[in-house]
Image: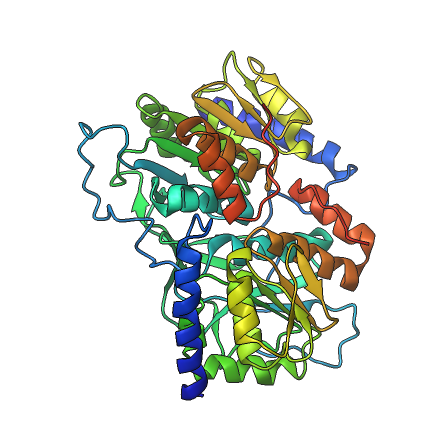
Length: 243
Length: 243
Protein backbone atom coordinates (compact mmCIF):
# COMPACT_ATOMS: atom_id res chain seq x y z
CA UNK A 1 0.00 0.00 0.00
CA UNK A 2 2.80 2.41 0.97
CA UNK A 3 4.63 1.62 -2.26
CA UNK A 4 1.51 2.29 -4.27
CA UNK A 5 0.94 5.54 -2.49
CA UNK A 6 4.56 6.61 -3.05
CA UNK A 7 4.15 5.85 -6.74
CA UNK A 8 0.97 7.88 -6.76
CA UNK A 9 2.72 10.75 -4.99
CA UNK A 10 5.47 10.79 -7.64
CA UNK A 11 2.90 10.72 -10.42
CA UNK A 12 0.94 13.44 -8.69
CA UNK A 13 4.00 15.69 -8.56
CA UNK A 14 4.66 15.03 -12.26
CA UNK A 15 1.05 15.81 -13.07
CA UNK A 16 1.21 19.01 -11.07
CA UNK A 17 4.21 20.18 -13.10
CA UNK A 18 2.32 19.51 -16.32
CA UNK A 19 -0.78 21.17 -14.98
CA UNK A 20 1.08 24.24 -13.77
CA UNK A 21 1.33 25.40 -17.36
CA UNK A 22 -2.17 24.35 -18.28
CA UNK A 23 -5.51 26.06 -18.06
CA UNK A 24 -6.13 25.04 -14.45
CA UNK A 25 -7.94 27.96 -12.91
CA UNK A 26 -9.13 26.93 -9.49
CA UNK A 27 -6.83 24.31 -8.01
CA UNK A 28 -9.17 21.40 -7.35
CA UNK A 29 -6.74 20.07 -4.77
CA UNK A 30 -6.27 23.15 -2.72
CA UNK A 31 -5.35 24.10 0.78
CA UNK A 32 -8.56 24.69 2.70
CA UNK A 33 -7.33 28.10 3.80
CA UNK A 34 -6.81 29.39 0.26
CA UNK A 35 -10.25 30.84 -0.16
CA UNK A 36 -10.50 32.35 3.27
CA UNK A 37 -7.44 34.05 4.66
CA UNK A 38 -9.11 36.89 6.43
CA UNK A 39 -10.44 35.08 9.46
CA UNK A 40 -10.89 36.40 12.94
CA UNK A 41 -13.73 38.82 12.44
CA UNK A 42 -11.41 41.79 12.02
CA UNK A 43 -12.87 44.07 9.36
CA UNK A 44 -10.41 44.51 6.53
CA UNK A 45 -8.92 47.90 5.85
CA UNK A 46 -11.52 49.53 3.62
CA UNK A 47 -8.88 51.87 2.19
CA UNK A 48 -7.39 48.89 0.32
CA UNK A 49 -7.41 49.22 -3.46
CA UNK A 50 -10.34 47.60 -5.29
CA UNK A 51 -8.07 44.77 -6.37
CA UNK A 52 -8.21 43.47 -2.77
CA UNK A 53 -10.48 40.54 -2.08
CA UNK A 54 -14.15 41.30 -1.84
CA UNK A 55 -16.01 39.83 1.11
CA UNK A 56 -18.85 37.50 0.11
CA UNK A 57 -21.25 36.70 2.95
CA UNK A 58 -23.39 33.62 2.39
CA UNK A 59 -26.35 33.83 4.74
CA UNK A 60 -27.52 30.41 5.93
CA UNK A 61 -30.45 29.37 8.08
CA UNK A 62 -32.17 26.23 9.35
CA UNK A 63 -33.52 24.38 6.33
CA UNK A 64 -31.49 26.37 3.79
CA UNK A 65 -31.65 24.70 0.36
CA UNK A 66 -28.32 22.98 -0.22
CA UNK A 67 -27.59 23.95 -3.83
CA UNK A 68 -29.01 27.47 -3.32
CA UNK A 69 -26.00 28.40 -1.23
CA UNK A 70 -23.39 25.87 -2.35
CA UNK A 71 -23.71 26.71 -6.06
CA UNK A 72 -22.84 30.40 -5.59
CA UNK A 73 -20.41 29.35 -2.82
CA UNK A 74 -18.48 27.19 -5.29
CA UNK A 75 -18.48 29.98 -7.89
CA UNK A 76 -17.18 32.73 -5.61
CA UNK A 77 -14.71 30.50 -3.74
CA UNK A 78 -13.12 29.19 -6.93
CA UNK A 79 -13.18 32.42 -8.99
CA UNK A 80 -9.88 34.09 -9.79
CA UNK A 81 -7.90 30.94 -9.00
CA UNK A 82 -9.63 30.87 -5.61
CA UNK A 83 -8.09 34.26 -4.83
CA UNK A 84 -10.73 36.81 -5.84
CA UNK A 85 -13.19 36.57 -2.97
CA UNK A 86 -13.19 35.98 0.77
CA UNK A 87 -16.25 33.77 1.13
CA UNK A 88 -17.80 32.97 4.51
CA UNK A 89 -21.03 31.73 6.07
CA UNK A 90 -23.15 33.98 8.28
CA UNK A 91 -26.18 33.01 10.35
CA UNK A 92 -28.53 34.61 12.84
CA UNK A 93 -26.85 32.71 15.68
CA UNK A 94 -23.88 30.44 16.34
CA UNK A 95 -26.13 27.37 16.36
CA UNK A 96 -25.49 24.53 13.94
CA UNK A 97 -27.99 24.50 11.09
CA UNK A 98 -29.19 21.62 8.92
CA UNK A 99 -29.43 22.03 5.16
CA UNK A 100 -31.61 19.75 3.03
CA UNK A 101 -32.21 17.47 5.99
CA UNK A 102 -28.67 16.08 6.17
CA UNK A 103 -25.85 18.62 5.92
CA UNK A 104 -24.95 19.86 9.42
CA UNK A 105 -23.19 23.23 9.15
CA UNK A 106 -21.53 25.34 11.80
CA UNK A 107 -21.81 29.00 10.75
CA UNK A 108 -18.48 30.86 10.71
CA UNK A 109 -19.97 34.18 11.74
CA UNK A 110 -23.13 35.71 13.12
CA UNK A 111 -24.81 38.91 11.92
CA UNK A 112 -23.04 40.68 14.80
CA UNK A 113 -19.43 39.74 14.06
CA UNK A 114 -19.09 38.98 10.37
CA UNK A 115 -16.60 40.94 8.24
CA UNK A 116 -18.38 43.76 6.37
CA UNK A 117 -19.74 42.14 3.21
CA UNK A 118 -19.30 43.52 -0.30
CA UNK A 119 -21.59 40.82 -1.67
CA UNK A 120 -24.44 39.14 0.22
CA UNK A 121 -25.98 35.88 -0.98
CA UNK A 122 -29.49 35.08 0.31
CA UNK A 123 -30.38 31.47 -0.51
CA UNK A 124 -33.86 30.01 -0.17
CA UNK A 125 -35.35 26.88 1.33
CA UNK A 126 -37.26 27.25 4.57
CA UNK A 127 -37.34 31.01 4.11
CA UNK A 128 -40.06 31.25 6.74
CA UNK A 129 -37.31 30.84 9.36
CA UNK A 130 -35.30 34.02 8.57
CA UNK A 131 -38.47 35.90 7.50
CA UNK A 132 -39.75 35.62 11.05
CA UNK A 133 -36.52 37.03 12.50
CA UNK A 134 -36.60 40.84 12.46
CA UNK A 135 -32.85 40.97 13.22
CA UNK A 136 -32.15 39.27 9.91
CA UNK A 137 -34.30 41.74 8.00
CA UNK A 138 -32.63 44.66 9.79
CA UNK A 139 -29.20 43.22 8.97
CA UNK A 140 -30.14 42.89 5.29
CA UNK A 141 -31.42 46.48 5.17
CA UNK A 142 -28.44 47.94 6.98
CA UNK A 143 -25.82 45.88 5.16
CA UNK A 144 -27.30 46.80 1.80
CA UNK A 145 -26.32 50.43 2.38
CA UNK A 146 -22.67 49.57 1.73
CA UNK A 147 -22.70 46.37 -0.36
CA UNK A 148 -22.02 46.22 -4.08
CA UNK A 149 -24.32 43.26 -4.66
CA UNK A 150 -27.36 41.80 -2.89
CA UNK A 151 -28.14 38.48 -4.54
CA UNK A 152 -30.99 36.10 -3.75
CA UNK A 153 -31.49 32.56 -4.95
CA UNK A 154 -34.87 30.82 -5.13
CA UNK A 155 -37.19 31.89 -2.28
CA UNK A 156 -34.39 34.04 -0.85
CA UNK A 157 -36.09 36.75 -2.94
CA UNK A 158 -38.74 37.00 -0.20
CA UNK A 159 -36.02 38.26 2.17
CA UNK A 160 -35.15 41.04 -0.25
CA UNK A 161 -38.88 41.80 -0.65
CA UNK A 162 -39.44 41.94 3.11
CA UNK A 163 -36.43 44.28 3.39
CA UNK A 164 -37.97 46.62 0.80
CA UNK A 165 -35.07 46.08 -1.59
CA UNK A 166 -37.28 44.83 -4.42
CA UNK A 167 -39.61 47.86 -4.42
CA UNK A 168 -39.73 49.38 -7.90
CA UNK A 169 -37.44 46.68 -9.25
CA UNK A 170 -37.67 43.52 -11.36
CA UNK A 171 -37.17 40.17 -9.70
CA UNK A 172 -37.55 36.43 -10.08
CA UNK A 173 -37.70 33.38 -7.81
CA UNK A 174 -38.32 29.62 -7.96
CA UNK A 175 -41.04 28.87 -10.56
CA UNK A 176 -43.32 27.48 -7.87
CA UNK A 177 -43.12 30.73 -5.86
CA UNK A 178 -43.71 33.23 -8.69
CA UNK A 179 -47.38 33.84 -7.82
CA UNK A 180 -46.61 34.12 -4.14
CA UNK A 181 -43.86 36.70 -4.80
CA UNK A 182 -46.25 38.75 -6.97
CA UNK A 183 -48.65 38.95 -4.03
CA UNK A 184 -45.97 39.52 -1.41
CA UNK A 185 -44.12 42.19 -3.40
CA UNK A 186 -46.80 44.25 -5.22
CA UNK A 187 -44.32 47.05 -6.03
CA UNK A 188 -42.06 44.56 -7.83
CA UNK A 189 -42.25 43.42 -11.44
CA UNK A 190 -41.94 39.66 -11.10
CA UNK A 191 -40.43 37.89 -14.09
CA UNK A 192 -40.96 34.26 -15.08
CA UNK A 193 -38.76 31.96 -17.12
CA UNK A 194 -35.58 33.86 -16.38
CA UNK A 195 -32.43 32.32 -14.87
CA UNK A 196 -31.86 35.59 -13.03
CA UNK A 197 -32.81 39.26 -13.10
CA UNK A 198 -30.14 41.96 -12.66
CA UNK A 199 -31.11 45.42 -11.37
CA UNK A 200 -27.54 46.53 -10.69
CA UNK A 201 -27.05 46.19 -6.96
CA UNK A 202 -29.96 43.76 -6.56
CA UNK A 203 -29.75 40.45 -8.41
CA UNK A 204 -32.38 37.70 -8.00
CA UNK A 205 -31.95 34.16 -9.30
CA UNK A 206 -34.62 31.60 -10.11
CA UNK A 207 -34.61 28.28 -8.28
CA UNK A 208 -31.75 26.21 -6.92
CA UNK A 209 -29.27 25.63 -9.79
CA UNK A 210 -30.02 29.06 -11.29
CA UNK A 211 -27.95 30.50 -8.44
CA UNK A 212 -24.87 29.22 -10.27
CA UNK A 213 -25.78 31.26 -13.37
CA UNK A 214 -26.47 34.37 -11.32
CA UNK A 215 -23.19 33.99 -9.42
CA UNK A 216 -21.24 33.57 -12.67
CA UNK A 217 -23.01 36.66 -13.97
CA UNK A 218 -21.90 38.61 -10.88
CA UNK A 219 -18.31 37.35 -11.34
CA UNK A 220 -18.58 38.46 -14.97
CA UNK A 221 -19.61 41.95 -13.83
CA UNK A 222 -17.01 42.25 -11.07
CA UNK A 223 -14.00 40.50 -12.63
CA UNK A 224 -14.77 40.34 -16.33
CA UNK A 225 -15.90 37.75 -18.85
CA UNK A 226 -12.61 35.86 -19.00
CA UNK A 227 -12.55 35.29 -15.23
CA UNK A 228 -16.17 34.11 -15.28
CA UNK A 229 -15.51 31.77 -18.18
CA UNK A 230 -12.47 30.31 -16.44
CA UNK A 231 -14.54 29.74 -13.31
CA UNK A 232 -17.25 27.98 -15.32
CA UNK A 233 -14.57 25.94 -17.08
CA UNK A 234 -13.03 24.94 -13.76
CA UNK A 235 -16.49 23.89 -12.51
CA UNK A 236 -17.23 22.18 -15.84
CA UNK A 237 -20.46 24.16 -15.88
CA UNK A 238 -22.15 24.73 -19.24
CA UNK A 239 -22.43 28.46 -18.76
CA UNK A 240 -24.37 30.47 -21.31
CA UNK A 241 -23.85 34.20 -20.63
CA UNK A 242 -27.03 36.12 -21.35
CA UNK A 243 -25.29 39.00 -23.13
CA UNK B 1 -43.93 44.05 11.17
CA UNK B 2 -46.21 41.48 12.83
CA UNK B 3 -49.09 42.61 10.66
CA UNK B 4 -46.99 42.25 7.55
CA UNK B 5 -45.87 38.81 8.60
CA UNK B 6 -49.44 37.74 9.30
CA UNK B 7 -50.43 38.94 5.84
CA UNK B 8 -47.56 37.00 4.38
CA UNK B 9 -48.57 33.90 6.34
CA UNK B 10 -52.10 34.11 4.91
CA UNK B 11 -50.76 34.56 1.41
CA UNK B 12 -48.34 31.70 1.94
CA UNK B 13 -51.19 29.38 2.95
CA UNK B 14 -53.14 30.44 -0.14
CA UNK B 15 -50.13 29.86 -2.31
CA UNK B 16 -49.60 26.44 -0.78
CA UNK B 17 -53.15 25.44 -1.68
CA UNK B 18 -52.60 26.51 -5.26
CA UNK B 19 -49.25 24.78 -5.37
CA UNK B 20 -50.59 21.53 -3.92
CA UNK B 21 -52.18 20.79 -7.27
CA UNK B 22 -49.25 22.03 -9.31
CA UNK B 23 -46.10 20.37 -10.55
CA UNK B 24 -44.16 20.98 -7.33
CA UNK B 25 -41.93 17.96 -6.94
CA UNK B 26 -39.57 18.61 -4.10
CA UNK B 27 -41.10 20.99 -1.59
CA UNK B 28 -38.64 23.87 -1.51
CA UNK B 29 -39.90 24.84 1.92
CA UNK B 30 -39.60 21.55 3.63
CA UNK B 31 -39.17 20.18 7.09
CA UNK B 32 -35.49 19.44 7.60
CA UNK B 33 -36.26 15.88 8.63
CA UNK B 34 -38.10 15.00 5.43
CA UNK B 35 -35.08 13.64 3.60
CA UNK B 36 -33.62 11.76 6.51
CA UNK B 37 -36.00 9.83 8.70
CA UNK B 38 -33.81 6.86 9.45
CA UNK B 39 -31.47 8.43 11.98
CA UNK B 40 -29.74 6.73 14.86
CA UNK B 41 -27.37 4.44 13.05
CA UNK B 42 -29.73 1.49 13.19
CA UNK B 43 -29.41 -0.44 9.95
CA UNK B 44 -32.76 -0.67 8.22
CA UNK B 45 -34.46 -3.99 7.76
CA UNK B 46 -32.90 -5.27 4.54
CA UNK B 47 -35.91 -7.49 3.93
CA UNK B 48 -37.94 -4.39 3.10
CA UNK B 49 -39.34 -4.28 -0.43
CA UNK B 50 -37.31 -2.36 -3.02
CA UNK B 51 -39.81 0.47 -2.85
CA UNK B 52 -38.30 1.40 0.56
CA UNK B 53 -35.90 4.32 0.66
CA UNK B 54 -32.42 3.61 -0.58
CA UNK B 55 -29.57 4.78 1.62
CA UNK B 56 -27.26 7.27 -0.09
CA UNK B 57 -23.96 7.80 1.74
CA UNK B 58 -22.10 10.97 0.77
CA UNK B 59 -18.49 10.55 1.83
CA UNK B 60 -16.88 13.84 2.88
CA UNK B 61 -13.34 14.68 3.90
CA UNK B 62 -11.21 17.69 4.80
CA UNK B 63 -11.04 19.92 1.72
CA UNK B 64 -13.91 18.18 -0.10
CA UNK B 65 -14.98 20.24 -3.12
CA UNK B 66 -18.27 21.94 -2.22
CA UNK B 67 -20.29 21.37 -5.39
CA UNK B 68 -18.87 17.85 -5.86
CA UNK B 69 -20.91 16.61 -2.92
CA UNK B 70 -23.70 19.19 -2.69
CA UNK B 71 -24.78 18.81 -6.33
CA UNK B 72 -25.51 15.08 -5.99
CA UNK B 73 -26.71 15.75 -2.43
CA UNK B 74 -29.38 18.12 -3.74
CA UNK B 75 -30.40 15.65 -6.46
CA UNK B 76 -30.82 12.62 -4.18
CA UNK B 77 -32.36 14.58 -1.29
CA UNK B 78 -35.01 16.21 -3.49
CA UNK B 79 -35.78 13.23 -5.79
CA UNK B 80 -39.19 11.61 -5.49
CA UNK B 81 -40.67 14.59 -3.65
CA UNK B 82 -37.80 14.30 -1.16
CA UNK B 83 -38.99 10.81 -0.27
CA UNK B 84 -36.99 8.47 -2.47
CA UNK B 85 -33.63 8.42 -0.72
CA UNK B 86 -32.24 8.56 2.80
CA UNK B 87 -29.20 10.79 2.25
CA UNK B 88 -26.49 11.23 4.88
CA UNK B 89 -22.89 12.37 5.26
CA UNK B 90 -20.15 9.93 6.25
CA UNK B 91 -16.55 10.73 7.15
CA UNK B 92 -13.48 8.89 8.39
CA UNK B 93 -13.94 10.41 11.85
CA UNK B 94 -16.41 12.51 13.81
CA UNK B 95 -14.23 15.63 13.35
CA UNK B 96 -15.67 18.71 11.70
CA UNK B 97 -14.41 19.12 8.14
CA UNK B 98 -14.03 22.26 6.03
CA UNK B 99 -15.22 22.29 2.43
CA UNK B 100 -13.94 24.85 -0.07
CA UNK B 101 -12.22 26.77 2.70
CA UNK B 102 -15.41 28.06 4.31
CA UNK B 103 -18.19 25.51 4.85
CA UNK B 104 -17.74 23.85 8.26
CA UNK B 105 -19.55 20.51 8.28
CA UNK B 106 -20.16 18.05 11.10
CA UNK B 107 -20.37 14.55 9.60
CA UNK B 108 -23.51 12.64 10.57
CA UNK B 109 -21.82 9.26 10.60
CA UNK B 110 -18.42 7.62 10.52
CA UNK B 111 -17.37 4.64 8.43
CA UNK B 112 -17.98 2.52 11.52
CA UNK B 113 -21.58 3.45 12.30
CA UNK B 114 -23.27 4.62 9.10
CA UNK B 115 -26.39 2.87 7.84
CA UNK B 116 -25.51 0.32 5.13
CA UNK B 117 -25.39 2.32 1.90
CA UNK B 118 -27.13 1.34 -1.32
CA UNK B 119 -25.44 4.23 -3.13
CA UNK B 120 -22.05 5.74 -2.25
CA UNK B 121 -20.99 9.15 -3.55
CA UNK B 122 -17.25 9.89 -3.57
CA UNK B 123 -16.65 13.58 -4.25
CA UNK B 124 -13.26 15.07 -5.04
CA UNK B 125 -11.26 18.05 -3.86
CA UNK B 126 -8.29 17.35 -1.62
CA UNK B 127 -8.47 13.67 -2.52
CA UNK B 128 -4.96 13.20 -1.13
CA UNK B 129 -6.55 13.23 2.35
CA UNK B 130 -8.77 10.12 2.01
CA UNK B 131 -6.27 8.45 -0.38
CA UNK B 132 -3.75 8.35 2.44
CA UNK B 133 -6.24 6.70 4.82
CA UNK B 134 -6.26 2.92 4.32
CA UNK B 135 -9.46 2.62 6.39
CA UNK B 136 -11.31 4.68 3.79
CA UNK B 137 -10.07 2.49 0.95
CA UNK B 138 -11.03 -0.64 2.89
CA UNK B 139 -14.49 0.80 3.55
CA UNK B 140 -14.99 1.57 -0.14
CA UNK B 141 -13.90 -1.95 -1.13
CA UNK B 142 -16.04 -3.69 1.48
CA UNK B 143 -19.11 -1.48 1.01
CA UNK B 144 -19.00 -1.97 -2.75
CA UNK B 145 -19.76 -5.67 -2.29
CA UNK B 146 -23.38 -4.82 -1.42
CA UNK B 147 -24.06 -1.40 -2.97
CA UNK B 148 -26.07 -0.85 -6.12
CA UNK B 149 -24.08 2.22 -7.17
CA UNK B 150 -20.56 3.53 -6.50
CA UNK B 151 -20.39 7.05 -7.94
CA UNK B 152 -17.38 9.36 -7.98
CA UNK B 153 -17.29 13.04 -8.86
CA UNK B 154 -14.18 14.86 -10.08
CA UNK B 155 -10.99 13.52 -8.45
CA UNK B 156 -13.11 11.17 -6.33
CA UNK B 157 -12.37 8.75 -9.21
CA UNK B 158 -8.90 8.24 -7.70
CA UNK B 159 -10.56 6.66 -4.65
CA UNK B 160 -12.33 4.15 -6.88
CA UNK B 161 -9.05 3.53 -8.73
CA UNK B 162 -7.13 2.97 -5.47
CA UNK B 163 -9.86 0.55 -4.38
CA UNK B 164 -9.45 -1.44 -7.60
CA UNK B 165 -13.00 -0.70 -8.66
CA UNK B 166 -11.99 0.91 -11.95
CA UNK B 167 -9.89 -2.03 -13.16
CA UNK B 168 -11.09 -3.15 -16.59
CA UNK B 169 -13.66 -0.36 -16.68
CA UNK B 170 -14.16 3.01 -18.34
CA UNK B 171 -13.95 6.16 -16.25
CA UNK B 172 -13.64 9.93 -16.29
CA UNK B 173 -12.60 12.69 -13.91
CA UNK B 174 -12.00 16.45 -13.84
CA UNK B 175 -10.42 17.56 -17.14
CA UNK B 176 -7.27 18.69 -15.35
CA UNK B 177 -6.78 15.22 -13.81
CA UNK B 178 -7.34 13.07 -16.91
CA UNK B 179 -3.62 12.45 -17.55
CA UNK B 180 -2.98 11.73 -13.91
CA UNK B 181 -5.83 9.17 -13.80
CA UNK B 182 -4.47 7.44 -16.91
CA UNK B 183 -1.15 6.96 -15.12
CA UNK B 184 -2.70 6.03 -11.78
CA UNK B 185 -5.20 3.57 -13.25
CA UNK B 186 -3.43 1.81 -16.15
CA UNK B 187 -6.08 -0.94 -16.31
CA UNK B 188 -8.80 1.68 -16.84
CA UNK B 189 -9.93 3.23 -20.10
CA UNK B 190 -10.03 6.93 -19.22
CA UNK B 191 -12.50 9.00 -21.23
CA UNK B 192 -12.29 12.73 -21.91
CA UNK B 193 -15.05 15.21 -22.71
CA UNK B 194 -17.76 13.15 -21.06
CA UNK B 195 -20.07 14.44 -18.31
CA UNK B 196 -20.00 10.95 -16.80
CA UNK B 197 -19.24 7.35 -17.65
CA UNK B 198 -21.62 4.57 -16.56
CA UNK B 199 -20.32 1.00 -16.12
CA UNK B 200 -23.40 -0.26 -14.32
CA UNK B 201 -22.45 -0.37 -10.66
CA UNK B 202 -19.56 2.06 -11.08
CA UNK B 203 -20.37 5.56 -12.33
CA UNK B 204 -17.71 8.30 -12.61
CA UNK B 205 -18.52 11.95 -13.23
CA UNK B 206 -16.27 14.65 -14.66
CA UNK B 207 -15.53 17.75 -12.59
CA UNK B 208 -17.62 19.57 -10.04
CA UNK B 209 -20.99 20.44 -11.69
CA UNK B 210 -20.92 17.21 -13.77
CA UNK B 211 -21.82 15.41 -10.54
CA UNK B 212 -25.33 16.83 -10.94
CA UNK B 213 -25.67 15.18 -14.36
CA UNK B 214 -24.33 11.86 -13.09
CA UNK B 215 -26.68 11.95 -10.08
CA UNK B 216 -29.69 12.70 -12.29
CA UNK B 217 -28.59 9.82 -14.51
CA UNK B 218 -28.53 7.51 -11.48
CA UNK B 219 -31.99 8.72 -10.44
CA UNK B 220 -33.13 8.05 -14.00
CA UNK B 221 -31.80 4.48 -13.74
CA UNK B 222 -33.21 3.81 -10.26
CA UNK B 223 -36.55 5.66 -10.38
CA UNK B 224 -37.19 6.27 -14.08
CA UNK B 225 -37.03 9.15 -16.51
CA UNK B 226 -40.09 10.97 -15.19
CA UNK B 227 -38.74 11.09 -11.63
CA UNK B 228 -35.36 12.35 -12.89
CA UNK B 229 -37.01 14.99 -15.05
CA UNK B 230 -39.15 16.17 -12.14
CA UNK B 231 -36.06 16.42 -9.96
CA UNK B 232 -34.24 18.47 -12.60
CA UNK B 233 -37.33 20.64 -13.01
CA UNK B 234 -37.51 21.21 -9.25
CA UNK B 235 -33.82 22.19 -9.26
CA UNK B 236 -34.33 24.29 -12.42
CA UNK B 237 -31.38 22.40 -13.88
CA UNK B 238 -31.06 22.24 -17.66
CA UNK B 239 -30.71 18.50 -17.75
CA UNK B 240 -29.91 16.84 -21.05
CA UNK B 241 -30.23 13.05 -20.68
CA UNK B 242 -27.59 11.29 -22.75
CA UNK B 243 -29.93 8.60 -24.07
